[in-house]
Image 1 (cartoon, rainbow, N blue to C red):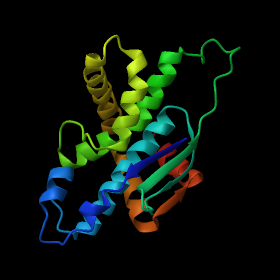
Image 2 (image 1 turned 135 degrees about the vertical axis):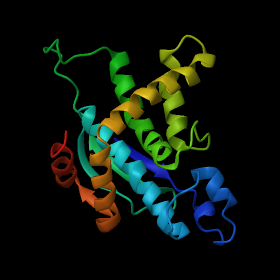
Image 3 (image 1 turned 90 degrees about the vertical axis):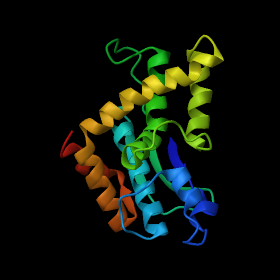
Length: 193
């Protein structure tokens, strides 16, 4: 499984004097950093949110990085192991599995919202597109998708806030090292979880 944050590279590459698109896209920062540093920091929170939620949902993280390419500012790679069908306690419904996947997909966006104070969904976000496609079969009507995702977003926010110290450590390490192995991530998370 790959979770990634799309680079709004046209926003990040603008002249430093034109901050309006950045502020509209990412909210205001109480940081006195350059535009690229703010973007990198936001990417680190985004990827840390994905990584923590993937861990909480039982996925084996293999790498988290904030060194992007033309399409993505960063990514979290993980392995997802299917439950043993003979173990009734471990086997949830298909809906449960989709909801866990949705939590992983949306956790980066929710972590960004916590940091920036921005509310609502960024409609240009690739993660939101994936979430809508995953959520459609779970609701009765397409008008129910956004309320469903908002409810799930509240649960995700509660989970992330409960482990925010771990998010902060992941962010600090990502900003320093740019890439963390799955073992690094597990050691950080298991130190608190």
